[in-house]
Length: 276
Image (tube, helix red, strand yellow):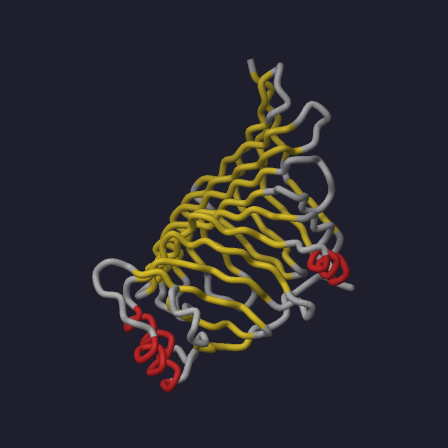
């Protein structure tokens, strides 16, 4: 036997920066369980850093796993036929999206050991994409190390000082000429809140990737030529490469060429945070 409740409309606010609305939310749970299943009906919207994003899907369902004290242990949401549109932006369409998160303890913020997995298939963003109008697959698996209390400058700086970082494991990205598989590494921020760390991946088409980055003006023609001259093009079987984030730069190299300085590609900005 299950209990079922329909809420309409739904409005959730977290200060002025974050929010969520839905035309209707159907909640259900077994009588002897704290776990919840949910389905969203009609239009949805998300407010992120003060920007409202309208969302429509063919179907949105999920589940929330709760501990005996009511805190959330795990969360999953899946959507098909998703269209998202921000103000003065062309819509982004996602054929299938699956997001899973877990928390080892019921504390505020992002606790040490929390995980996040995101899988998106056929992400279409016409006219704005770096490597083509469709991302065939984004599959990211992340684990947080160190407790991140909030998305504020002071909290992120404290997380950084305490060696907070994110480990990336068995992830992949297929986007135009980029076919990155077995992505793994460690991401963190430096003292200026810029991305830091390394990501290793197997890549199979360095010439095609260099040409696409140059044509989109993300790297210069000279940088593309340097990539082709310094980094051995992989033909057939993919080779392992490393993208490093250090001192405000993203740099690229083939793994096994540690005695050669990596090729700087572009400067890195500081990460956006809510406030001090």
